[in-house]
Structure formats: C-alpha cells, structure tokens
Amino acid sequence: MNETLVWLRDDLRMADNPALNAAAERGDPVTLLYVLDEVSTGVRPLGAASKWWLHHSLQSLSSDLKKLGLNIVFRRGSALAVVPEVVRELGADAVYWNRRYGLAERDIDTQLKTELREQSIEVQSFRAGLLIEPWTISTGAGKPYTVFTPYYKATLQRPEPRAPFPVPLGLSRSTITPPSDDIDRWSLLPTSPDWAGGLRDHWQPGEAGAIAQLNEFIEERVDEYAAGRDFPALHKTSELAPHLRFGEISPFQVWHEANSAAVANPEIRQGVQSFLRELAWREFSYNLLFHWPDLSTQNFNRKFDTFPWWNKANSPEFEAWKHGKTGIPLVDAGMRELWHTGTMHNRVRMVVASFLTKNLRIDWRLGEQWFWDTLVDADPANNPASWQWVAGCGADAAPYFRVFNPELQAKKFDPDGEYIRRWVPEAVEPDGSFAQHDSYKPIVDLKLSRDQALTAYDAIK
Image 1 (cartoon, helix red, strand yellow):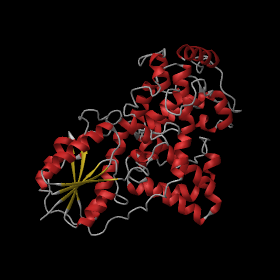
Image 2 (tube, rainbow, N blue to C red):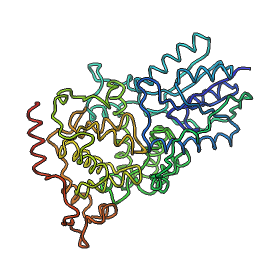
Image 3 (cartoon, one colour):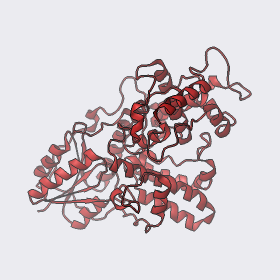
Image 4 (cartoon, rainbow, N blue to C red):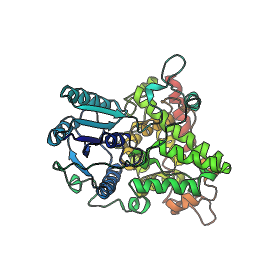
C-alpha cells in the first residue's frame, strides 16, 4: 500500500493547508510529521516566548488530528536526517509540504527534494503562507521591490487571492505508527521561574483560537481599525500576528474573511482596507527576507556598518530598556507589556525601537534579538525588517533623522495616560500628568541624545 507523509512546519492547521489537501486528494493513508529543528546550519532557534506558543499550538493540533483519527509524529533533530528516517519507517512513496522562505529553510527543502526524488519518492511543495511568493513579483526593471508603497500598488493590480481550502474530508489514517517524541520532554515551557502566566491569560494558541480571534476582530473591531489602530489603550488591533506566524490561520483565510465582511457591510470597508494593507506589510517583509536572507544580522543599508553605536549588550542602559525601567513612561509601558503578554502594540513598538537605536544609540540587532526571545509573534521576516525600518538602515526605512519622541507620542496616542497607567502606575499622577520624583526619572535626556544621534548619522552620510 502507498503511504503519504505530510511534513508540517509553519502551517499548524487543518483548514487551508494545501499540502494536507493534496494528500487527501491522493487518497492513500496519511501521516503527519513535525520536526523541531534547532541544529541545522542557518536555522534560527525559537525564542522563549515562541517556544511557549509552539508547545501549546502543537498540543492543540494533535488534539484536532486525533478527532479525525490521524497520526502526527513529533521528532527533534536535523530535518535532513529526520524526514528521510520517517519516510523509511513508513515506507512512504510521497512527501508533501508547504513552502518556506528563509534561505536556510529553502536549502534544506531543496536538498531533501533532490535526495527523495532520487529514491523515486514523489515530492511536492505548495504555496500556503504568503498571498504572493517573492519570486513572482518585481519592479518594471525586474528587480525586487525595496519600497513598500509601489510594492503595495503592484499587489493591488494582481488577481484576488485563491479561495481557502476547507478541512479535507476522507483522510485515511496510516496503520503504521512510527515512534514519536513526547513534546513535554522538549522543555519548551518555562519551569522555574514560570514567567508565562500573562501569556496564558492573554492567548489561546491553536487553530480554533486563531479563527475565534479573526471572527471577533471582524465582528467587533475592524470598523474602528483605521482610526483606532494607533491608540494602544483602545484594543482595536487584530492580535492575529502569532497565529499567522505559526500558520494556525492562513493569509488567504484572513484576506477572504475580511474582504467578504466588507462586501456584506460597506460601512466597515475603510477599516478592512486599512487592515489588509497591514497584511501586505507582512508580505513585503517576506519579500525582503527572500531576497536579502541575512536581514536579521546585516544592515540593509550597508553605510550603517560604520555607524558608531554607543552601548553594548551588557550596558546598564540596555538592561533598563529590556525591563521597562528607563524612566520614560511610554517606553517602559511597552516593555512591561511585552514581558507580561508576549506582545506589544505596534505604535509602541516603533517608539521603544526608536528610543533604543537613537536616544540610547544601541545597535538595532540587540533589540531585534530581545524581541525574538520575548515576542510570541517573533517572525523571521517582520521582526528584523521592522527593526531596520525604525533604525533607519532598512528597506523603505524611516529616515534616521526621524526620531519618535516618546513624550509627544504619549500625548498624541495615549492622551489620558490609560495605557501608561496600566503598565507603569508609578509614572502617572492622579491628574494624569507624568510623575516627577527621584525614584522614577529618565536615564537619558531626550533632546540631547537625539541631537548626538543625528550628529553621528551626519558623519556617515
């Protein structure tokens, strides 16, 4: 009997999973595989918050699969060794997966595809994680887009995304059961101290949680998204980022659900269009990662290679920033929200990144690494692309001389101090004014540090 192996990666869902759908259409017994690969060359191991999310996402997926009578095999190690091993154990004659876009991951997939096909094993890969794959879109000169606005305009000229696939019916369970790891033994969860209480209170990892989050956003908040998305106290954003990062929901599902809602209710169209534009930013970031695979380690604008960063990873200023103790209320609020919930409002992310790279003049890579470890939505494309954008060294970057003033940003986007009061109560007086006392004061002068950063920037032009 023929056997099909579906190798899951950043696509931890049943619905709109093209690889799984193709396996169902093939009609032979199906086994699913997830490999936790932290050892292959170039593969970036997950940060602590992402590991927490992955553990619960895999648990949720395993439970969903059991309801359909399907097996999932969990293994840890090099994918180049594990995948062929499971193929042999199953006697599989077909392996399906959905595509990835980082260079190391693409190299692994290419090598596996070659090796398995040499053994007369059918291998197919599918588009599942991006609406537009990076090699299918380019400028009129045939080059990758490096500026978002023309990229976005080009995407609007393309046909609308394909319709999502439903959960496939008729999947046949294999009678062969290869050994599987117990994911509890992978030590993905914190032990002592257990810092994940806020994450547990805030999130529901898994496909069901992703769908519920999307539905809630469209039904309750998307109508006010365009006007409210910049105000961190209002809770007007979708909070879909970690679900998209782990593929618990696809961009095709998100696009069609949001667009269908706007067709049915034209009053929400402005909010939907604003939201889908943010989805396009995610696509743009992956476009950058595909063409510039060292996005998390190298300045996109190489003239920043000589920029004189001030402080190092072990500096008191960096430690104060990480733990929300800078004496700058909006910065501290964002960093404490991040530590407690594993996320941070996007407007505040820009503020804290600007403060780190410009007022403290700390290398953006240190901030990117901290976010990689503490964000549940730490994404290999969005995270470095966004950090480089704020730092001024990235594609389509905010100019280096654009410095987000945390005090002005707070007055504009948290005018009543609600967000700051929630996370940094000691920073706000009862009348809403910022506190001024010895136990809470800035670690740096905002105006002086801004001027010094601009002088350093002028020197490398």
